[in-house]
Amino acid sequence: MKKSLPILLSFFLFTAFFGGKKWTPLLDKDLSQWDIYLSYPHKSQEIKGLARNDKGEYTEPIGLNKHNLGVFTVKEENGELVLHVSGEIYGSLASKAEFENYHLKLQVKWGEKTFAPRETEPMNSGLHYNAVGPHGADYWKTWMKGQECQIMQGRFGDYWSQAGAKVDVRSVKQADGTYLYSKNAPLVSFGQGEAAGGYVARSQDFEKPKGEWNMVELINFEGKSLHIINGQVVMALENSRHIVNGKEVPLRKGKLELQCEGAEHFYKNIEIRSLKKLPGKYKQFF
Image (cartoon, rainbow, N blue to C red; front, side, top):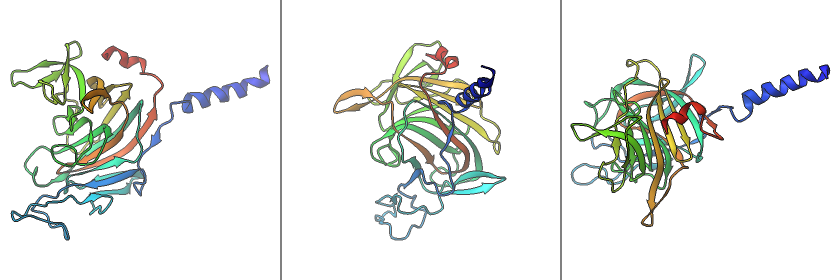
């Protein structure tokens, strides 16, 4: 029996570190796990070979995996891989794989440059999840249908419905007509056809000062999701769904998208792991 103890200990250690808890990196130098979609450039930008109308506006997107134009690049800095998002052209880095029931984490910080049409607006990006269907389905003709965890100066963790995705959030209506997530409030439906619209503000602001790395985590499990900013839950969502052929159906699985939306920023340590159940400490939010 004594001789078997080292074997048992090794087994338990292996299970503890790798048994369903292993983090899988999604970032490499070649962006091999991602597709690049670039939308309609702003008319102030010069993109050769792309059609314009008589107002100088582009009439076609750059497209999927056709040109990167330096919008998404990866470099090694201090022994870490860092994704640079230039901000110049609206677009996305979309995962080639679809994911369901997972914990995602990444670090993000702002750069210095902003571009039209948001050169004077707060720096902006976003993490889309449960993304399905064609690129360019949203208002800006850039992103897929899905749910969004906002990444924006002063708005980290807000919720946006992209291209008609729907969800329920415990929230209270504010004086300006917008809604604020509140853990103990009644459930309100958001998204396509809902009177409340498609936006919910996070409960509190936990963003770090510009230039510092922020940790963004997403728990996505069986139609429920949590937006976690620097260790703090700021949004809980449930009953993720969308309309297909006139009927609401669950939207629990899809691709990930990282936005490029007019602001220079950086990502690192993009990792994901599968979940077999919702972690116990998060059950209180549902």
